[in-house]
Length: 109
Image (cartoon, rainbow, N blue to C red; front, side):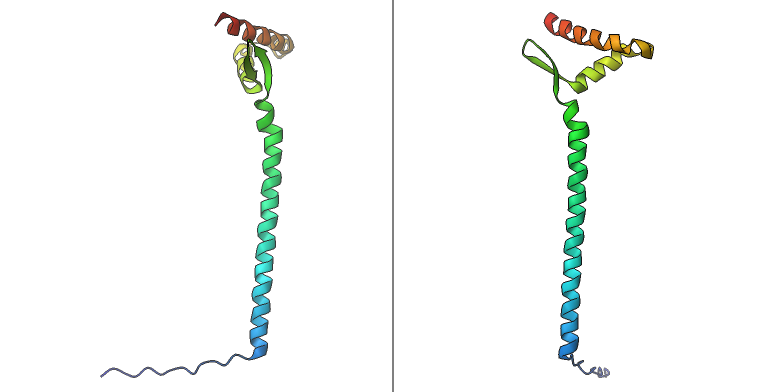
């Protein structure tokens, strides 16, 4: 024969305890909401800073030849390609020369 389970008496909750729990839940929801808001604001600030500081400048048009536009990222890659092995002192002259090279290559196409 199975033993009978002893039923625990239901705990009586007073009005004061109930209101305390309700206030505590409300406080937790407010803190969670404010924390989420602060994290979202920080992510937006970092995202906007990354976009305007890094992404956008590399994708702006810097050279235009025969209705073909070349962005800053392409210009930097070509400058690195032609600048390998050159001393740093010649980079100013090479930067102007790369603009001419890009234009000439586009005209040859």
